[in-house]
Length: 335
Ligand SMILES: Nc1ncnc2c1ncn2[C@@H]1O[C@H](COP(=O)(O)OP(=O)(O)OP(=O)(O)O)[C@@H](O)[C@H]1O
Image 1: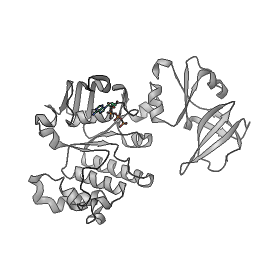
Image 2: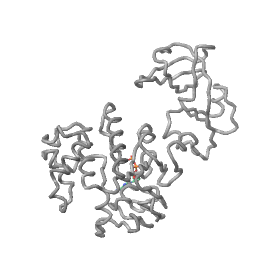
Image 3: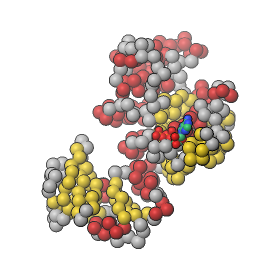
Image 4: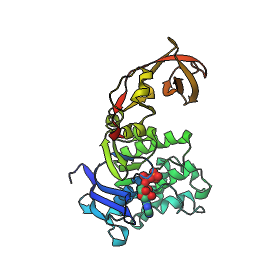
């Protein structure tokens, strides 16, 4: 393993109850040090299974997982080193005692040998995650977002080299999600922590990750930087995970003025420019997205998603025309 890598899986397979369609199959990945790598894919594609294999809480049926040069084995096989250097924040915090104070919950994450520095380290973690004011509250009384901050503080207090995050912002409402994402990115970058993040949310993936690994049915189908995969997806599957888009057959795409020889056309909402000239499309729905709107527009039974920055200019029922600056073409086998 080269110095710029920290975790590696070599041809790892983990199936449940011998069912090859479950878990993950023959996965080889390299996780770069001090970067945020996101594992993305539809529900059931094997993201959590892969995270548990990296952490060592699942043992592969075949293949090997390495933390630096050291093989990661499952907990029952007793390899401790990798666990000390890694921390996992799971989707739900159900194993944490709701009666324990925030201070004590975070302190429990500090290894015994560091307990002499407990006051300084817990205080630091509380400030880092912006939750100093909550230190005396029982964990169970916190909001979803606050709980998530505490769980991440508890994981970071041991100064892990690798932080594994499974849908970490799931329970956090939209208002606080962006702030928490921003804080986590800032903290991990400042501390040089390596993060492996499992997420469903395209905005989260694109704004937080340095690298993406796309899983489908337990296999890696694409990987690269967020920019690369967003702007030049090789697969329809990847485009649909990363972007707000419309998928059309090549026959339906003719309504948008696109002539394609391939079976499927994908149009990102941001690539549709709108104006009032011509007025051939009907605005069916306006979705408020904060500083922009997403319009659902229709013509000849075809609906398109469109980003509109000129808010309130195109209300439901108004007529508009479009021009498409870019689209992607895919064959059937690429879905
Ligand atoms: N402990 C288990 N026992 C049996 N099957 C399992 C187990 N864990 C995962 N699976 C199966 O393996 C496949 C991958 O599951 P996994 O939880 O890794 O997917 P995922 O991509 O994380 O899904 P989601 O996004 O819904 O959390 C699924 O078909 C799932 O049913």
